[in-house]
Figure (cartoon, rainbow, N blue to C red):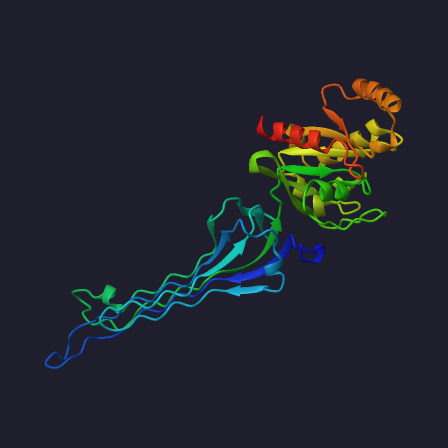
Length: 333
């Protein structure tokens, strides 16, 4: 999937169907001139549903489908025949889709399971036919109920990617390069900030045909929680990751300072981020000899008490097997 085809935010207008009107039919047949009322009920209007589909990874298929309308219910007819129900509309969305009311910003519901079905807009009820209104004092009612109108609303669909591991780091930290060597994903890689403008997903093949999903999140900058840089556009994608992999290049002047900024931005956006498993990965370590690596390890042991860290090099393919083992253990513990 190309970066341009990854759509994680769409606005759509949905409209459910109007209910059909009840019939005012009076029964007539040979030798029965006044058979009484037998008008049937109107059919209900069509609903608009959202359905979870694990085969979808993006909202791209809804990018140009801005208006979605369900069918109207059919009118009732004689012989107490009920009108046909309006055609329901089913909107398939990837797992992790959040639905918001565009007017209020309120979260209506989330789709997190394959096949999960939620009513987004309920169709109008069909009107009752005149058969329901007969009585001892009014044996031939010549009125029936109209169908109730459907509902319409503007909604926002936001995708929060469902990945096991989220790659967190400053722009140009090497997240896309790491993703490309761990998985078969082919993210855009270049030597300038904000190369990645959309999340990239990759499946890491592990031992015994097992696997886990890793997401490359666009780079964080200081002030991202307030919307700077790409701001909230990407921070929501980290919320569903069970493990966060903090990637800091070894040539960073202040590794602890950069890590603290990343943690601070995530915490400001959502304090629950602190509850996730964390792993610090120092990248580009092919630049270090054994002496420099031992010296750096001594510094990190003091600065990162209780926080696991590892040394890797994506380009030189160093430490990647150990990284997979560590992530698998964290995900399964």
